[in-house]
Image 1 (cartoon, rainbow, N blue to C red):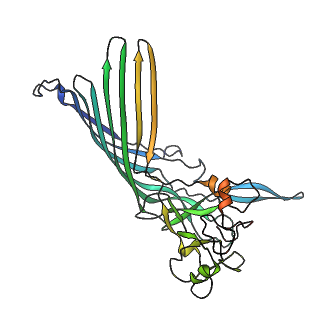
Image 2 (cartoon, helix red, strand yellow):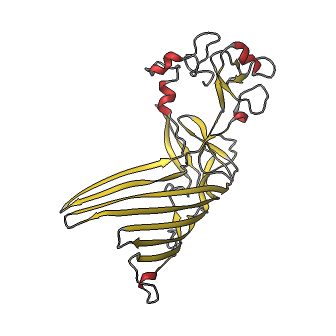
Image 3 (cartoon, one colour):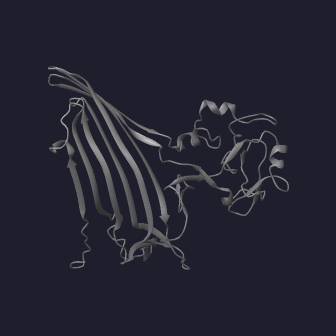
Length: 339
């Protein structure tokens, strides 16, 4: 630190070797430009509140006649930047009288001192998390680009091309072990050691119970059931979603949750075209992402059958009578069975 202000210096080394500039490289129309790139750098990330290292209180009003102070942040003056070490290897090339271009880059990133909210037991209640460094993460992948210029004339020039990328990340360390986080009010995002970041986490399903007999057969002793926050039992019946009982105990609870999706794509990139006529340029571009799962929150509302909101037409095919084979569960206000 310097006068109480924390600072850090992160080095960067980038190397490039243009092979086509070397005297020994053969002069040919097939390879007009060839460059090999290598780089290694260290970068930091401090993307948390400016006051995360300090404990703080805020004034609150408990009623019109009583004011007080409430603990709103627990500080940790030992926290520091995340540190990411990045290795990049690749090449750039121009071929066939500069009509074709091709580039490739491989990367390996390792991050330690991940900034994370760490949990602790607080007998007084209230805040029980504070910022700390404790996680590690790895990212590997590649990015490639290809383009061709089929038309190169005095007034007209056309270039079309595409890029493709792939990455794979893996959490290698967490301070408190695996944990879940919430979007839209439920714990449905899992971050776990040995797994990619932010997997979709929830119940596997096997359709909708057609009859009460099916719901009863899915249970261990009687109906398959779940317990609400008030410790009241609720049995699954015809028209409810058949959640898979992973541990075969006859009860659907958090122990039955599993990984049900991955938001990370298999490949991503763009497809583009540049068309030039004299001084006029038209740029066309499409971005794509393939192989990743997406959480359709809007459909969970419009096909819920459990609110007073307008529903999609698909809701007319919901379960309505004993023995009906349906893809959507029964209408049930408030959705007590988490259908």
